[in-house]
Image (tube, rainbow, N blue to C red; front, side, top):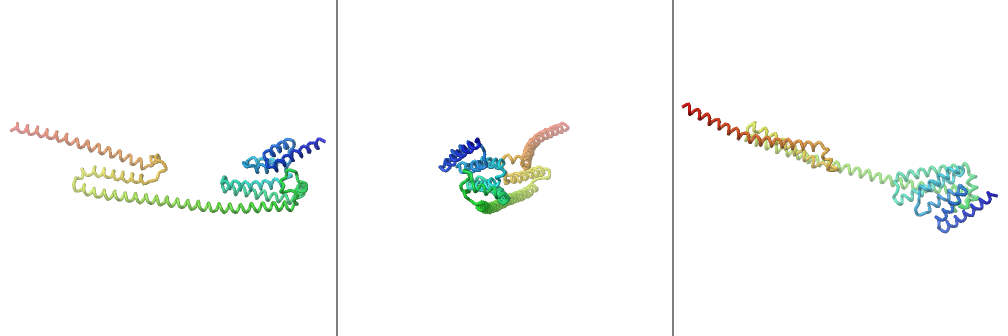
Length: 317
């Protein structure tokens, strides 16, 4: 008697939920379905809930998957229906996310591969336990989607085959798209590599030109100094010129190099080499100025000594 009352209450609530669903009030239908499931959970309740959730404008895919998985674990004897539903949801989710560009191609292909596995398992269930599927089709629950009503078992196999064909077609389309995108990315990478190579070659040519220009200037200066000065006077000058030329080539190399950030320049060894050369050149300039002052003092001292010698020579006479 109690079971009859529960069944009658469930049937009444299911009919109300189905009526609201037909009127387009999916949220109201889901609320009544929740009341139904609080009284007693049956396998088609989870099936209907997942389908109705997908019809909402804001599709909560994670919640749908949770509903399907719960029904799948609670009612293993109805594996065919949940396998088909799971494959169908995978297929439609891929189409939905692809249309909004919210899923990578690799993830879409992975979902479709899993859906194809579900289809294969559903076909296996259909072949191994056809009587369970036939009984459901002969006496379908109120909340089972109307597309299954009054279908024979061969129509169930046909629906599975149709879904499998559609999934295979979409898989081929996405695979082709991914191949095209990957090819385009490879071409872009090669273009970037060639541009980087051209940039490196340009830098190398500029450095070589700068180096040879510095060498030519050094040779010309060396000739001029050799004709106009002695060896002892020429060596400091040539040393300073050599440092200047090395500094010039180093700075040219830094300027023509490509850095992502300005502070990366400080991490380059050439920066510290240029800094060291500047310090050395500064010391050389300072020492040369000091040497220019010291000869004046020596000349004064020498003149004083000569004056003293002349005075002594006069006294002797």
